[in-house]
Length: 104
Image (cartoon, rainbow, N blue to C red; front, side):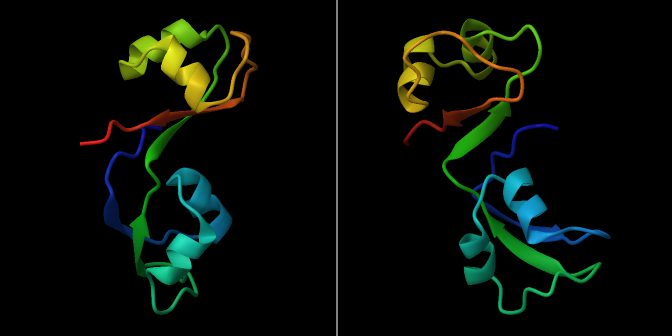
């Protein structure tokens, strides 16, 4: 899945979508989804407004390192460590790394 970079967009609900799934998929919270939509029954075909957080979620894959992730997103290893409160370079498969968008 490609990272979600938009600030706000419309999403058409698919079969079996849950708020929890959407929060994970779009880097947002349940309160953001509820706050931005009048009716949040999540029926198939419904359009909802999604407002994403100020970061991209990256889940560590096998053989990935901080330096490889830093290269992918064009950020420094130091920034990744700082933004994710990491004291060492060790990563775990499936670990969530947040890549914060630069402030304009």
